[in-house]
Length: 395
Image (cartoon, rainbow, N blue to C red; front, side, top):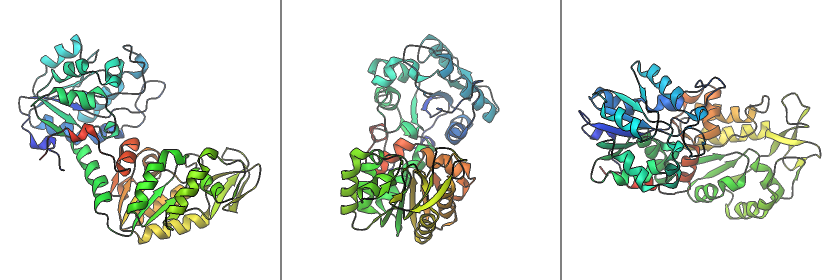
């Protein structure tokens, strides 16, 4: 069901409470090192400001203890970066929904922007506390969810707050609308062949995704450390590779019920230590010697996977093929990224490390969509519905 967006509501002279995802990385000097999540929210933010609305932004950052202000988790650096990107003043409340928030919200002029302090400074955020949510809801006339990265959560700002808005408009921002459109369409009506590429460390993290995608995909290509658990399930030798021995039987079951859709690496690039300048060798899958660990898919696998991607009409990629942060073990992930970027398919990068990789390789503008939410995109690929989205206004 299509949800109303921020463009569908009149915001002139009104106050919009917008949940954004400003959970950005900071360096030791409390400077934002990657402003992508802030930039992704700009279209929704500008839509409100350009039409004479007042804007209150709320977000979490990091994992504070929920016992009040902690300087290292302050949203001040994010607010300063936003002011720089918007080229206009951005106020920061010293609390989250408290006296300072309320005073600054009441004083907002049309076109003004206020950022509340870190939502997780308040214990009520993670608990989904109704009283805390009521305080937040009381600040505004319109609620807007533009934080896809937390759409799978039931935090107070995501669920209890829009509920507390009552009959006031509750809409999605452009970012969430785009995420839902791409991920929902990919699952419900994909162009075929439909190829999913799944990597990362653990089978555990991807069980439900693999099971769901096997019912709708034509091929599911496996890479990353979880490939070694599958290799073990086939009786292979994995040396010192990272494996989940308690998931070997599950991996065996997934292979058995995949009807040949599940494709595993045919070779692996190994190292004798977890560092870029270690000794290296390429070996066939299931033949990693003792004292060596698989750190990337091998060149034959990269070639096979690239050919599969080239034939696809829809590609979803979630999880790197190897230790892409540590050259030369980025080669497999790079080969897949380049193949996805060069393909004519609708290509969706499912957030997290895959998004970081596609950015690192400078290919983000060559794919159809890069998700901002690793966990949220995974749950959507599992076929789950999000209460935080379901309760918003229908078109």
